[in-house]
Length: 88
Ligand SMILES: [Zn+2]
Image (tube, rainbow, N blue to C red; front, side, top):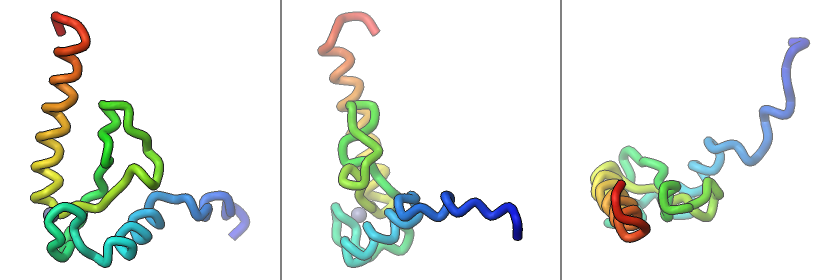
């Protein structure tokens, strides 16, 4: 009982964010609006494109939408790299 570190209970923990997002989205996927049986935390603007880890850049998606979006994000990142400068 002596080694409890109270700072670990900060309200900015990711777990809490996920619950907040879930409630904010009424338990529905942000893309297809189906109930989230199993949700994935997604970066609206991918980290690879300069997106942040902030709460307002996060959303919950169902697995299917997350897979689709990840594919698209990777394509965007790839396209951005190509347009930035020649040989990758
Ligand atoms: Zn979905």
